[in-house]
Length: 243
Image 1 (cartoon, rainbow, N blue to C red):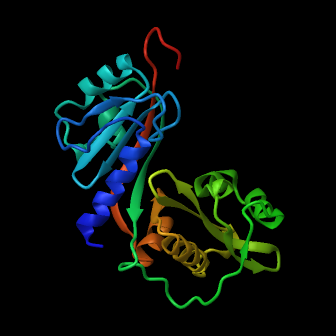
Image 2 (image 1 turned 45 degrees about the horizontal axis):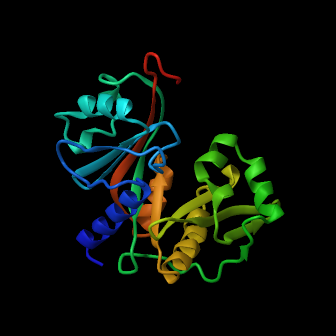
């Protein structure tokens, strides 16, 4: 798959998640009304950039018009900058921005990690790992939402690193990776993530890596993922409307 084809595939994924007809554009950025959008939590505004173009969704016509005016004249590459859009919108809460990265078989660099054990997504030992790491780390990983088995590395305390993916509409495999804090820096995240990506590619899915921490982004790049865009979700506080 060429870089252009990978970008096009990623854009098709997010237009599917928008749950309404919408097209990536440079300027002006189109804002579609979509109460069922999966670009963001329900009732929020979601903005996704891929390459030099973006899409956005809002939960209703009133909010969409406010967002259109706020984004008017801004280049697509700037609309996921909270500081930039915050000058024009009454933002109550923000999620992101998160980097969106993708990988195809030609770019994938799994390394020589060998066979990696796997356990069911609802395995008690996986729940134990999530319970003993900081709550923020557990939430950031999304490991409790995977639909694939979990690929794991075990230590004396049980599972110390795990990865899997959640199958998304549009044919994507959204990666989740977590390593116990005391075990980081040993390359375990790359080992388990490589196994999960291998499984996703064999299933014919597009591996997607969404991350904010620099450490997570380094692991993705080491595996051959390309950073193609960003995602931002914002909750607006509008006069006369519930937050």
